[in-house]
Image (cartoon, rainbow, N blue to C red; front, side):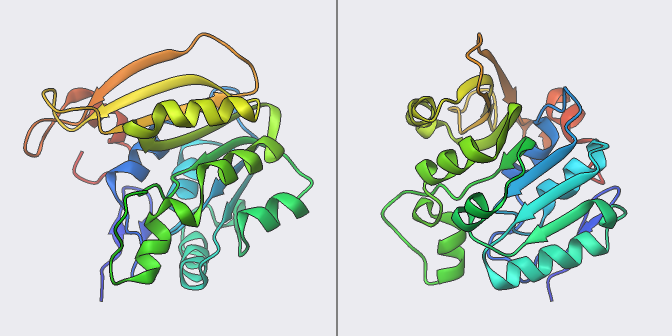
Length: 237
């Protein structure tokens, strides 16, 4: 049996989830700005619930909702919430994003999402893993349309995508009235190409702040910036 992933303040079971905890999710959860002290947060495509749990640790938001369509992942997310120190602030809905956006009348101060984005023309022999990883399970257009309905007027939308998709995503977001505010370009090492874009969007068009984050100086020798960002979560940081 796969052992729980242990963080400093909580544990995450992930044996029932197609997508396991990875650097993308932890980076997004640690990097996402909490300026404005969001009162309610939505985690789209929660999986294990890692992003919601990180938001609960980092913020005082009284209401953190998660959304997960896969049966097993939903059940595991609920279990992870209930066994955490913040169970009274966390709730997971078992529904599709489309259903949720149609039925929920509330809006959220912060929406966070680590969407499936592998658009390459190959699939594995594991349909659940494919569903979790491939963009056709949650197309960017679908995400942005729902976010444009669910985000409060002054709210912030935060996500991680491949750097190769950044320009296309910004153009799509513009169509839904969402504009980039902060962008963090992530590299594995200083000499490597940019791999991921951490991005925030709002309904207000402002000057975009861009910066870089390098994860490692060399193998398992983490940069000061990466360590500073993740030290509240990883046990060995």
